[in-house]
Length: 445
Image 1 (tube, rainbow, N blue to C red):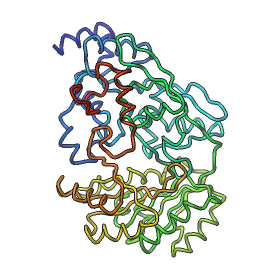
Image 2 (cartoon, helix red, strand yellow):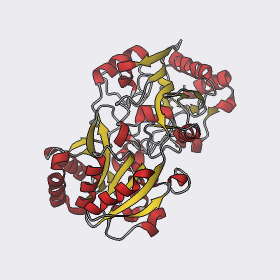
Image 3 (tube, rainbow, N blue to C red):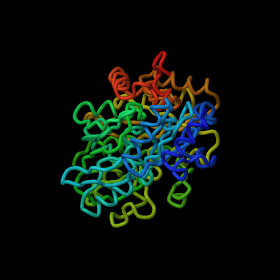
Image 4 (tube, rainbow, N blue to C red):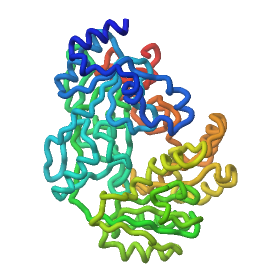
């Protein structure tokens, strides 16, 4: 019985460390899954039986060993800023809150080693104090953790320069196996690929090594354009101009910017915008480039105020979805990749088919060195059936979809090496207790 094993866990760890309070347990059992109306209906009732927040790796081992002994499902979580239900327990069990494993262990000239629960915002702040900076981080970096980003994320601010997590942006991870005598595995090289964006299904990441770079002086800018196509044309040319060092190119068509309440006095009605982080000394080049496409830089935050107070990154990536969700009605999103040379034809066909039921939002990134117009379009949600009609239409015209409306690993469209992940799952978690149900293995879940 559940109560019996919770009592035993209390005896093992002390009652203070076993969380059963309903409000806290509900919070720790959820992430930002509610971005998706589909996931909201599927996951809103899911909750763990209890949660623990280990202070040390040895205490984490104790919890894992106990769970394996009693065959209790485990779900590891960081800050819960993921959007696909990655950190939601499907079968109850124990939530392991890793946010107390939050030490920055070592900084070298080219890398930083940190525990999984370390907040990326704290890491970035400390690195910048030392004249360094992270390569990439999500728009939720103020609260997102190292382990959560690696296991549930893909890219973000910095991806226009350095690519995503798969592009050499994780140098090593330490992973705990889910066995009665847990082992710590050191993963490096090509094998790291099997631990990125896998929802933490193949082991608990306890530490990671991330590449770092010399600190840049980033100015933040909003460029305004009469039409979205001019904004996209400007962004595409900027993305390919290696003489301008940039960290962020985020493009939103009107009416998406009207939802950005803290930017309200800087938003121009009817204008599409590009939000930018660009090396400050390139500001002149940036303004001349914007003018080529009938745009102008109408708002600036100097590098001296970077990551202090108002931050444009708080309105980019899925933060744009968050603002739309807060201040719009029945809005959700998709994750898409347009074809650079066909982008305007693809946009025209979508607009012709769906009007402003689909509103365009692009984040320019690099993937394997190639510039990609990655997209997080805002969708007016009418029904699950209609949502999948839109998804099918996107795919029919060559727009790739990473579907954020499923919690099943490998079903969202990411190019994951599922055969290797399933093999590692068998080795590291032989009883299939970790994030149970997220990998659809026959007869195992």
